[in-house]
Image 1 (tube, rainbow, N blue to C red):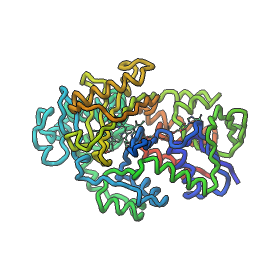
Image 2: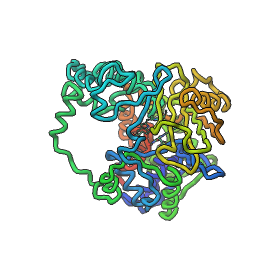
Image 3: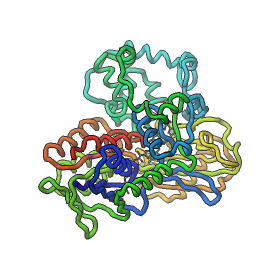
Image 4: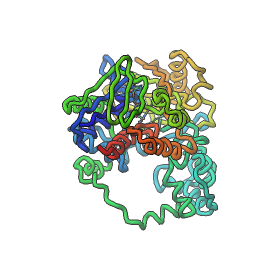
Length: 469
Ligand SMILES: Cc1cc2nc3c(=O)[nH]c(=O)nc-3n(C[C@H](O)[C@H](O)[C@H](O)COP(=O)(O)OP(=O)(O)OC[C@H]3O[C@@H](n4cnc5c(N)ncnc54)[C@H](O)[C@@H]3O)c2cc1C
Ligand SMILES: C=Cc1c2[nH]c(c1C)Cc1[nH]c(c(CCC(=O)O)c1C)Cc1[nH]c(c(C)c1CCC(=O)O)Cc1[nH]c(c(C)c1C=C)C2
């Protein structure tokens, strides 16, 4: 029976081990290596002594799309449905997403009605940007930056006030450097195939779509019927990690914590893993490490290393602020994002307790830095600098004068990979190289096929599906 090693105990690694046992299902040994003493990677739900729940990493999973359905199906199989808290379309956090321009908060248009109105900071109704796209000439290219694509097709206001802040609110990144082909694949395809985004979207209406087989899943159907937009769990996203871990233990997966893989190499169809003084020889590896960590362990395979090294990462400062009382923030909203044109060190602020209320507490999360982290805060800022910046931000923008009753500051070093122009090809080249050299290894995780939790789980599933055992 072949032995499979899963590298990394973040959500991708845990999901890969889960799919090995439940999708294929693999009868041989599965060993999971995790460098640290805890599982979950960037997923980090914390419960304070007074019971207040904080999320330092991800806080919601999208319920929509194929990857959204896939995660829900996994949650269903893990028996988590009673612990899920959905946020339905129509809830203020799905309608009210704000941006800060000139120090003022503005709600982004979120309905057909508001798209026909002129709402500041826009100088004209958003619907006119669709006409801009219909009139804009097609430019044939293989990839370009998200900003330049949107600026060309929809105009500068959509690029500056929607795409720029949204790129900060998902990638903590710079829309002028990130790839439209990787992040807006469909938009890029519509222009290349149909000459424009609106034209492509209209053509798409007439194509027959395959029914997603996951729609048979009870929880997926419930989410569709009840119009869930996003979801979390009663004790936070960490519950997914705990539940997966328990399942893997029952499935007989060998979980090795505190086991940092130092090097891996391929030798006559096997993979050799060096971890401290221990050597393990396995038949296949599913790497669920970030490309950055992976590049430091691939040893002599310089070509693979050079592909992996080219994917940049950004650091995010996360400050969770807790206040006594429920009426600290006046606006009922998801939160707000700050476009890069604003003179601010803040990327955005999430109003956590608006989506997921907690008894007599208001929780806000201020996210800072990202692509601009080092230029704003230097290489080793003290946590006090970030805390003070966060308190000043909510004081100035949300007019919160009271002191938080507790706060948590985290500096998440190199936490979000940046899919820069050319990313899709670089990933494809890295995967092809492994196939060409007969290296029995798959690459999964948020460095390659999407940065969300859903994408990570889906990439684990795809890696397992591609295994030929
Ligand atoms: C601040 C923040 C907010 C986010 N918000 C959301 C959100 O709201 N919704 C959403 O869907 N997504 C969100 N994300 C993204 C999501 O958290 C990540 O995409 C996802 O957690 C990545 O999981 P992963 O398993 O691929 O990687 P990781 O979590 O990075 O896991 C990799 C694991 O590998 C281990 N490791 C590293 N090197 C080695 C080694 N040499 N040997 C063994 N183990 C090693 C690490 O310790 C780690 O546990 C957010 C991310 C951040 C940082
Ligand atoms: C301000 C910085 C950040 C905020 N969230 C993140 C950063 C860097 C990280 C992040 N947020 C989401 C994802 C997953 C995306 C996915 O593929 O599912 C990641 C990596 C979720 C998300 N955040 C926003 C949107 C529109 C989404 C997509 C899912 C959804 O519709 O909810 C916007 C947003 N992010 C932040 C704020 C303050 C904000 C909008 C007001 C914080």
